Image 1 (spheres, rainbow, N blue to C red):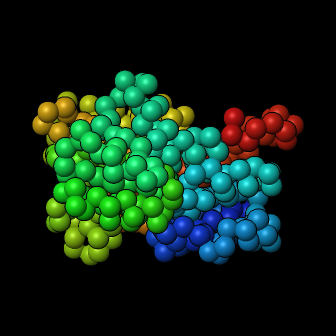
Image 2: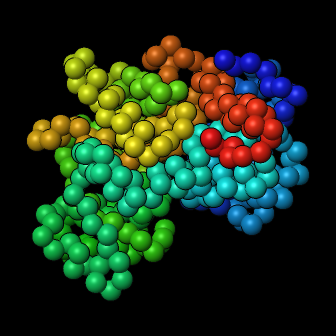
Length: 324
């Protein structure tokens, strides 16, 4: 584990990109770059522009042999950059094209989890001029979400029918497809997955009514309990559910699974993030640290998911699916 690359491939840390999470990605990329450089790996930072069409040229110009993907949101997490890297023959960290696409799509992920008999909120797809009618029979408050967005961008918490149209409009700014989801009250939890193992559970404690972008990114608006103050049995239940959610979507070596522990149903899945935030203060690194894995070691372990593809491709004579 964590052996030097054969042929000394240059690692490119891909960050930035065109999504609404660009600034978060730049911070993740810088932190990963510094950790890999401190570990003695040949590495360069590859910031991608806000124009997706320029990515191929920028990656080719960087002359990298392996990509550490630190891109958040659409383009980085939805299988797009993974597919581009496959066309360039560059192994990359994280989940495959297919798993990335499915995990980012809230419709597919919920359908797959339901098929695997995993607990999810009640939800409906809302489209077109009849979107408001889709809320009939659902109780307020509701959560309105864009289907393919992360970090709570475009999410609205709607308390009354009068707020519905504005919530739909806001979500539609991030894509045509929007889902309505029941609002669940309970304890917010997140569980990191690393190399087939669930990391210690973290409790998220927002200082606002809802865990939205303000709570996530404005200083002092949220605190985190590491590990979460759960019984051993409850922690194991949350970890087992997170690992099942990860595996149901065919995700790769790492992810972060968000859930809420309700009084009525126990833990209920909310989201999965295949490229979690990677600053030293982000949630996956916090969970890893609680498990005795420092930030540099975490980055090296994540890099192993790309080197495994490199080894697989080499043993197959350089052909085949790099995500096998």
